[in-house]
Amino acid sequence: MNPIETTIQTRSGRYIELLAPSVCDIDWHDICHALTRICRFTGHTKRDYSVAEHSMLVAELVKDTPQAIPYALIHDAHEAYIGDLSTPFKAAIVQINPEAWNAIKAIKEGFDIAIHAAAGLPYPVPHDIATLIKQADYTALLIESRDLMPYQVRNPNNIDVPSGKIRQSGFTNIEDFLIRALSEHLPYFARKAPAA
Image (cartoon, rainbow, N blue to C red; front, side):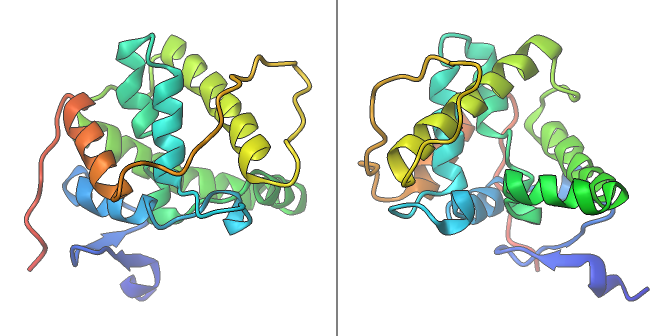
């Protein structure tokens, strides 16, 4: 197999092997750059709304549990390398070919391991924090769909959804804001020099 077939290049010029990501590959500026350019809801929102903004919303929803904030900020960081696959698309893959979904999960898991190691956070995520992040992630989905889509997604468990609306960010640069949040909350945050 030609290595280029499973290698991506990041903004900083790094080449990353999708089948074997390393902690040395992880650059927070690459991640923030990509996440601010990847749209939620496959781009069908009323305004541009990025995975970076979603990550910050999830962090806001767990702010009463400070130890969960760094995990919330990076819960979708792997999407900087593999993209944001919508929930319906994931469900379709599972229905057509569960083994294909297992392959995608394995690639995601490889990046999650490398990303958490680069952040100085244990992985797998501690169970209580993982549960809290999952709940906040779904609450964020309900808020986002209510405010940014024609219709809110179903809420079969009647989760209490905060009434505050998502507003256009007051920050002129979402990427810089996410970088600042990561540098403040991650146990280990390092800027790497661009790849030669």
